[in-house]
Image 1 (tube, helix red, strand yellow):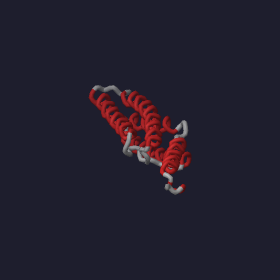
Image 2 (image 1 turned 90 degrees about the vertical axis):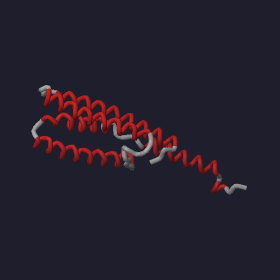
Image 3 (image 1 turned 135 degrees about the horizontal axis):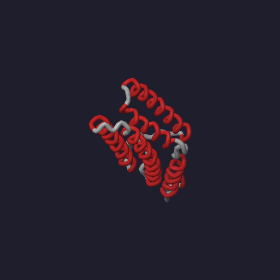
Image 4 (image 1 turned 90 degrees about the horizontal axis):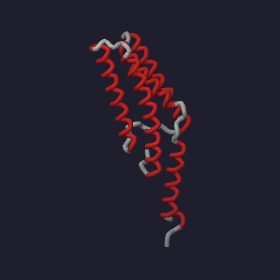
Length: 151
């Protein structure tokens, strides 16, 4: 006979309920992904400027990331590594590689082809990709939680 406190079906239901609650909570503020996209797009856009400006933007970018992490933690009560195992890793690596390729591409276009506006266009493209990718990442994370992928 199964003791009520150790009933496997009840325990499994509690675990599933906890996963569902965590997935419900793991929603960034609506402005979070666009803000991350703008920060990243700016990082791409400043690559063709003076070195001192790039350094200043790197500092602003870093501060912006710290503020985003703090806002996410305050809103959700948790923080998750973007490269964690699961569906999210594919999304995060895909975004990182795409932004890196855009950054290299715009620098090449600017320096070899003389297209001075390439970093601005590349920055806008990177901003859109990171914004949309952030929403995709969040959906993948929430799906992993519900299906048992955990943190």
